[in-house]
Length: 308
Length: 282
Image (tube, rainbow over all chains, first blue to last red; front, side, top):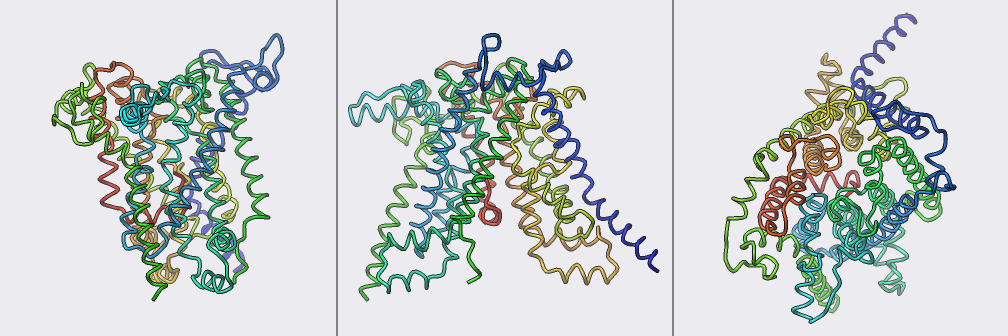
């Protein structure tokens, strides 16, 4: 009997694993093995034509320290800096916008479904090459924005895209413009907050401002936190927009050289695949650390409610 | 009474702000559509949204593309790739999600945690080794590197979406089907799949959109114009034509957005559902 039961359990397990097989194969062949392989490559010099040559930590050394023989890669540090700036400006702005608009909409307005659609359109289209091309024309020296600024306000605006001071901000704007997804999520979250909270607090004499910090923000904190982490992870990996807007070069003067763009240029432009692999691992570590920090901080800031 | 008036005024003000802001946000898109119908030489001198002279010339010229390859080919390639990815994701992500959500097996929690971790993994860590693997298989300049990974349920995001959805379905249905002699696969096909339809439609939508816009991988793996997709076609256009051809460029840009628009407006409610159940990345 016991033996029979065990046999049945094994059969049960096997048939369940049959369903998992495609994913398991994918995980081992297309995720885990490539990950380990790229970790190995990160310690080598590799141009895909000749076999990888072990060089220890040199790739990492060139990125962060450098000496006379192997000078530090200033373009790498610059790309890291540009990407950090992009992530830490665009993500908070995007979430703030999303929350502000969601709060505006959360008032029993009749047209909410229509508004939701309207505001989702930039997110729907924003990832495309077509919109990146459009952006390039909107903010060019003789682009649409400047034509309007010149004719309507008689100003003499700079060429946004080709000015290293402003180019990154056009990309930040493009990213913030796509606040549709977090807005829809916040709107759904706001609807979950019991009305009584607001009513009770206004009886107690709390103003709108006070209510926002005492009720709205704490109630939404898990959602805000989740969005923050997910948006950050995807912002670190932005590629298409920077590639198209800068014509694939990250210019002017590397001011839009995103991390993934530099990784692409190193790996596939200069065939330095060992170095590019090392860059991929540095990115992985950065994202892991930031996510861990976010979770740690959230432990004290995010309230998941106490069931009541 | 006073309260109601105050609320009405506040709603009115909100409506106005939302509309003004919305119009501002959509201005670039509307401008793009208008520009695609303007004469090439008036595109930048005429900031108005309604073209003075309406022409389809840009579309005719753009459709011809560059050299011998026209946009017809680019669209065909994009649709083939997207179609295959959609089919693969619907079948294999739902199969995996069913296993995680419903089946009992040793190590389930462990594998689920692993799957959730891959959700956060930056794609760059696997990009280079995958490129080397696909190259050694002779798959460069074919659609295979773009499509085959989907047949191994590599889009963890959709597995997560479907797991969340399947978990919310009543278990009693599976159990009664089990009593009626339905196997695991039978339950999956006859009970879980039909009930999961809304989440599957969300999967179809986002797989299509993200594959359509997946410029990075297309750039990596497709080398010859005959294999190019729509985004690659647009880039080719951008690189190889001077200032004179902004009209055709915009016309093809508009055309490249049409499939997304159609999907979005016909299946809106599944978008909202998908976004709110998972907190989609944007």
